[in-house]
Image (cartoon, rainbow, N blue to C red):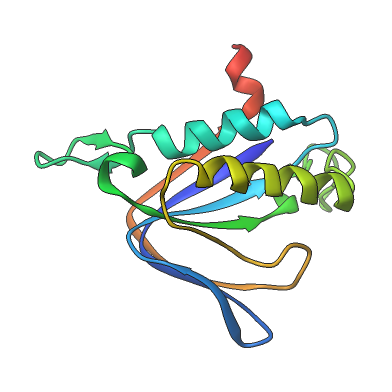
Length: 150
């Protein structure tokens, strides 16, 4: 399971010109689910996301987490994070989970993140979405649940 974190001053996601989720200062989290991912991957990645110290402290050092700043999260499903671009010029998505598995694990990620007490909003799974991001920094970090074993 992968999560691409972008620090934002604010963000929103729309479906059919209607805003379905928004956040203030915090993170936009794009989540991609691989076919071999489990609930443990979702739990690990959610906890890593909310506790990762990537917000600046008073000295400007990236030393604070979403929990520390009471940041808001806008979580958006993004199967294209699983793109395999090693061969040819067209990405392959054969490593991505089936829609049913991906939805269940995406929802597990969101449920786990909500246990933090932070404001968590989402886009709509398997829908075409327009994501408006006010990237702050910019700070963009990729997390991969497979790295927990390294």
